[in-house]
Image (cartoon, rainbow, N blue to C red; front, side, top):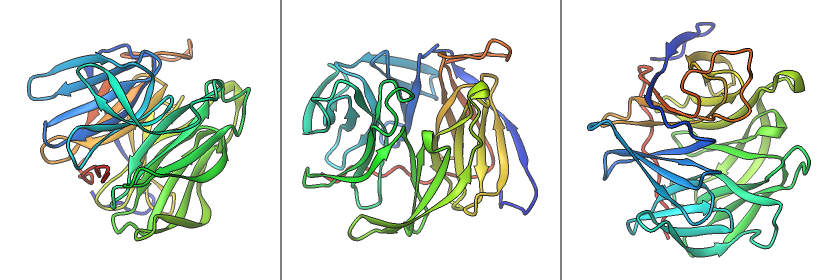
Length: 302
């Protein structure tokens, strides 16, 4: 599905797991298990959805987790409340690799992903980001276990993605009301030349925020737009070329999965719902097949 100038292609997502998650987040397709792992952050739950069996299991975690990635050594690495750590899903225990803001009761870690070199990027946000604005920081966990702060004064550190050639990094600060792009040095992991690509108008009466995102094999951006009931497909220049409709408003993130990486999985939230809008399956996991493939998720190289 090559993007065409001025053409907006519409799709509708189906509900595959009626989980009623408080805040579903962080979906990642794990190829070795042919399963989708996703989170319910405030409930401290890790979900594992097996599409071949249609079964979703959940595991209680010892602390809230905002992002999960696979590890090149096997297993999982997470961005948890207290920092980066290795997760044992069965027990829910997290062995810390590096603490991040663990002494700050006002913040927690949120969304994150790995770049092609296996560096794990994830940021923090305040538990109440409207009261404590700009309290977040975007961090980079390097393969040697060291942590580098990359962006400060972040409102809600959210969606991350890279162009297929790794020359551009995309980042969403939800309270920055849009998506920014950076020149990305794949060798060093440095970023420069920040520029605004998409802006969402801010309106407190009808809160619409960019949330999680993913990138497809054609370099287009799929952005979960909280409050809108949609996932937008945007060309790299920011123009709108596609849209997936979800029957609940608070859409949180998305990721490609399935054997051919052509299924778009979408997480949602059952909290802060607008009473004047339909909310079918709020907090559930949805799926659409929009005619384009995703890019395999990168593993942490530590």
